[in-house]
Amino acid sequence: MKRTLLYGVLIGAGFLLSACQQQVSTDPVARGDADFHALGCVKCHSIGSEGGTWGPNLTFIGFRKSPQWLDTWLKDPHGWRPQTVMPNFHLPDNVRADLVAYLASQKGQAWSYDQRPWNQPGLSGVARGKVLFNEAGCVACHSKDGQGGYPNNNVMGGHIPALTKVAEGYSKDELETKIREGVPQPASADPSQPAPMVFMPTWGKVLKPDEIDAVADYLISLDPSAGQQSGPNAF
Ligand code: HEC
Ligand code: HEC
Image 1 (spheres, rainbow, N blue to C red):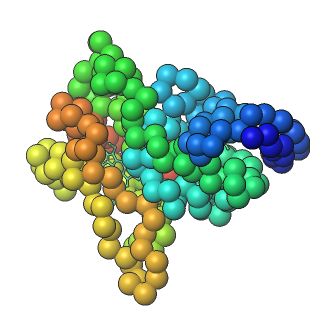
Image 2: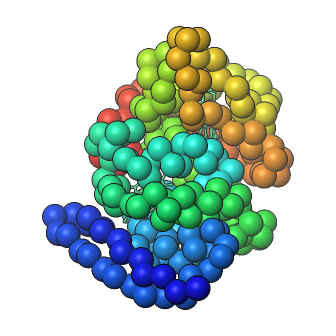
Image 3: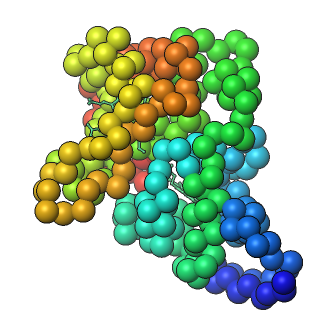
């Protein structure tokens, strides 16, 4: 099947309109993969070992975020987080749906255990936990250095919590249990409104106990006096 795809892509100050005629797959995940490259998402985001580092690594994106949230984000990143530097691509509905299918399929399989950046030789303890925090994507919700402040809907305060003070509230065992089990069904601040779209994932499904131990050590090492992050590069 041949089809002409027209994407209006807004990048920074300039408008770039590219028309590409290509052989289109019948698989939405494969089409989303092609779009992810054609639209330049890969310049800012990595999946597995390929891609840029300006935006969060997306190897675990389909594990940590729901398709519903991904669709909301891609429709209007600034609607969710006004100060984000991620551009609004004004994607046609069918292209957005294919990208969501592709992203939702990324549950960490692009790396084997040994390929995960935090499992490289020479990394241990807090330093290893910090790499895990950033590359597995804890940073995409809890922000740089665990300083919190990333938006969520219908939660008290409107934000995902900072993690800089967990050493005061949790024993190490309790902390590891929290990370392993997550909070799959967070409480709504207002039960009459839609439930929060971002929730703490059940990390025990994808991380091994030694990995959870390393990220717990990292959280315990964080500076409890650090404030809430609100700048453009909060992730
Ligand atoms: C100019 C760099 C840049 C480009 C290009 C870009 N992004 Fe982003 N993206 C970011 C940044 C930075 C963030 C995190 C910012 C934030 O949350 O405020 C982000 C966040 C995301 C997230 C949420 C990550 C998470 O774990 O919560 C997804 C999904 C995403 N981008 C997908 C895409 C897709 C798909 C494209 C291409 C259509 C794209 N991005 C293009 C910079 C970019
Ligand atoms: C998709 C977003 C998201 C990601 C990714 C995420 N978290 Fe969370 N996390 C949350 C939310 C939301 C809460 C608040 C849960 C609640 O109580 O409803 C939370 C709570 C926590 C808490 C408890 C904080 C407290 O004050 O009680 C810890 C600890 C934590 N996360 C650690 C982590 C670690 C470690 C990672 C990475 C391995 C991670 N989180 C990744 C969303 C996320």
